[in-house]
Length: 320
Image (tube, rainbow, N blue to C red):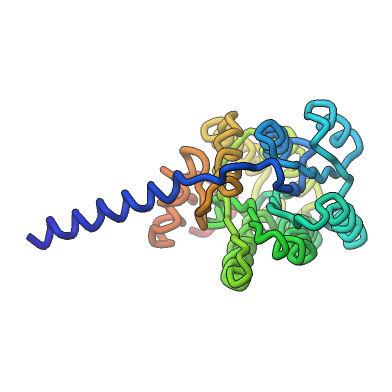
């Protein structure tokens, strides 16, 4: 009997969750959304899709070329501005520009999408500056932009959408990327709990691997080659001359296997977080996120360690 009661409770919970999840806002025409990193990738696609749906899109681009290209591909309602999330002055200028655009309505949505990945590779190959340059964009850029826009978000009782990664749940490689995404998870959780008093909602999107500039194989290999070339002779000897070639082979194999070209799987999550009356706390985008990385993040650490050790090449002078 208790089993039937439990099953009934589970069914009712799923039914209620599904009903809430399907409830959407009626109109988007008076709602302003600011998106960072709109030159290419997820941000570029999201800006175009929200523009077609009637949102008042304010797109932050790093380059003039990216801004002009997006402006030509969108309606006159979409506005662009240049913004570097690592530059406090640039952020302040963007906030004032947005404040002028939105007026008394405030800012309904902030999508922290801008991000970088390189350099990625074995931890010993890194310098401290390698971590700083990634976290300047992925971590401190997101935090500073969020804090700067909070007054406008509180004014509209809006919402924040932070783009994290499945590698914010499971650190599969060295470098600043995984670390930066772990911090976004923590920052988003604390921000969500602090600003819900003001009617501001915070969601996290955790994409798997998708074909964007971040996962471009040529860029990844070139960055890895720079790390390898600057290693001291002693360190290179400990890894062996074959290690670099084998590491690149494994990296390319994994990327070709799991990278999904359908970026809409990620932007669909972003759109739901902006359109739903009750946005989810977390969104997982991509088959690899749901079936591989997130389940793996709940496994005992030693199991993940064994699997990754079996996949990645071993240094020439390894002792285990």
